[in-house]
Length: 244
Image (tube, rainbow, N blue to C red; front, side, top):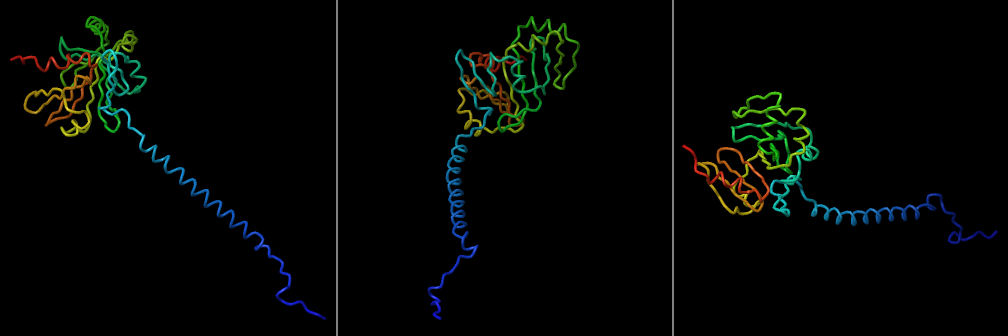
């Protein structure tokens, strides 16, 4: 009997040999898919990182027509206290603050406020005629003295609608961390005017922004915002002669 030569003997594929090419193809497709995913993801993430912008920073002041401006999402002279409450939340104190017979205002006070990367306190002052404030004071259910010596009067429930409809006159931001002169100039630019108030306090005035940046070497930084058209209200008291 003739035996077949070993070199020509038919060899049947084993089960694992049958699927080995398929496994290699699937692995190759998986590697290509991962590489393509990383390739397409990285540029997109890079673009997002470049265009991402922190909002609500103290120096992000938008000048608007008619001499108004917007900061912290609030349009000075136009936004109402009610609109500010909806935007910033209910965690605030609404009261009429009386510092003297000639200095009283309806104010909304946020003890904890975050302006972009800065934490601090925020005071929103309403624009109300003095006769309206007098009537609201007469209807107030009561008041109390503050540490500063000013008196704080609660708003009567019947006057709340009037309070929420009042437009914003000014904003004061008191950051927890003090700004130095170099940082202030880098962020806000060079002031149009600088006025010293005593030995430690300096006012950096930005009329086009409606900003009085108050720097105290022995105290905190204070930022006062008004509509640019009303800037003289901040500047005039600084130039007035001091009594006594």
